[in-house]
Image (cartoon, rainbow, N blue to C red; front, side, top):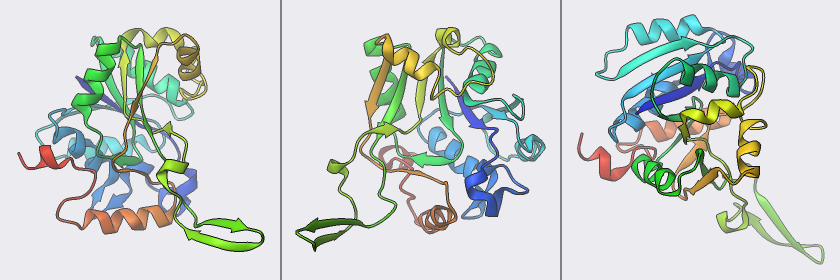
Length: 239
């Protein structure tokens, strides 16, 4: 099954790093974020990728040409100003597969992709998204009668589920993407949800985006571990 990686955005929230690099090419532990992402999929047996490029596409093209891995990796230029919906549609229309995996190129998780695909197929959804609980960015304060009674991290049980990416998509989802300039998150996703055709695969394990310099620095620390938390233990031991 081919995995679409959305890697065409400008990454303006990480401007310290993205003036000369697409955000998925920002280095984490000596390798680009996109390498860690592909490695996390490949460690579970999914090693066929198409990278949807746009901003500074030539940087990713050059990297893929010199990539020393056994994975099948192709790039598809989807336009500098194309939105996520348009990038997904162009990738699907470029290949004959009936099902695709898809994810954003600026975050990592230890999602069980096999379980995600089984959940999607068992329920016959048009699309399935992985739902996660967001990590707290700031210390949470609880106040009782003017007295601070708790200061610390927000408990996951207190958080709503959000879109964590890591999708499974049927080919016919392109019928729900109306233009290249339409974000997937505000176009096709709510349309599918309104029709009961969108699945939500709940993931309570590791998930982390890279939107800020602080998060990039946190990824650097995690990448130095013998077993980075975005590699599933059950699969990493096979490699």
